[in-house]
Length: 452
Ligand code: FAD
Image (cartoon, rainbow, N blue to C red; front, side):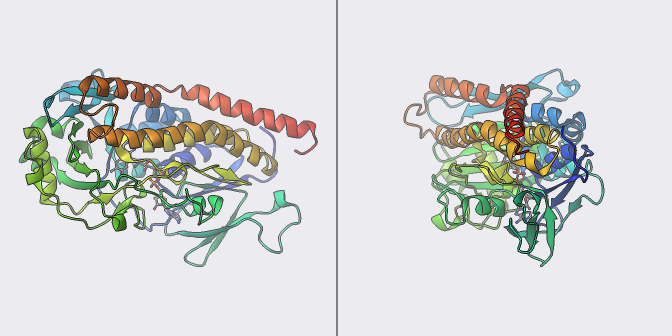
């Protein structure tokens, strides 16, 4: 690491999963002064349940064992009581719920020993507790970024990046990392408000209906095993899923309907929900339309239809041409929001955080920030954008709408096996090493040419 007289001021915009995990790592580095600016004044529990895959676990471990432990402390075993020891392998079970092959298991996603699920609100509380007091400001909603404030130092490298908030206040930083979710202001700053990839899209007009109930309530409606395990039940009019959250005391259940969102309700909301996706009033979910689904699926649909107040229209991002410019970068959903169907959006945010955390361990001065952000972009953009594409395809496969796969269980199995290997089995230590090699090469070149 190079030396710097003053700690480098790192502003993280957005205190979601990516922002807080990154802050938890960076705040351990004495040469950095980290501050998180979160738009909401208090975290709401909107009932979103996350089942983190193996790559998310590996990314948390790389940031620090305490980050992984914060997750484990808040999470629920996705397993029978017998698996509480963490010895039983658990997975999201993808099962056909419609057509001639109904009942067939076509994938076990994210198989891992002692795998767990967690509510987004619980995970955020656990991460927040790792950040020293005074380093997170709530109610600071970013309005715009000014990179060359008038009247500041002549050398661009010496000028602060200024954040302007909706409450009229400002903050200065040496580097801004935007983890402000799918409707990111930082993305708009980096790409331009009018860029085709800036605003989220909902190409397949997905509508996700969700409900959050106590486990006791769920037991009155659905198969008991789906209050402890994570199924995704497939069919052409929507896929159905359940996730136990809040240490097994509540169940988050949902139905995702392809073509169900009106263009007006497609990813057009204010963000700040599960993954910053929109929360809109929609058409009622009609259980009668699922009468030809399996009995298990029908029961879950019936439970969700009783209260669809937590309905979502989801969206994702078309590919950004770059994730950084100057001393500003974006990560997580701000950089590459994906449809939730591959269950890897939070994992990708955590992978971003792991790489940035690793690189910033070596950044010793403002002149080295650009090299770190370029290295981050080079290793993270291709992989995270492949996950965006993969999640779109997951959605079509779940709806029997993929031309190559249809409702053929064998082809589904092959697809899911390949996809799961890509997301879960990634070598994240190698990813960190590749980023560091690129960074060290760029810093070395700059040093030899007298630029740093
Ligand atoms: P967010 O978690 O969205 O955080 C962004 C933060 O920025 C928010 O706190 C927001 O308030 C704040 N913010 C927004 N604008 C501003 C501003 N202008 N100024 C300051 N702060 C601002 N992923 C998985 O890995 N596994 C799963 O099982 C899974 N299931 C999902 C289920 C659903 C229904 C959905 C919708 C998503 C799911 N995801 C899952 C995806 C996951 O939730 C997201 O990818 C993840 O939350 C992204 O984290 P993030 O920190 O980038 O963004």
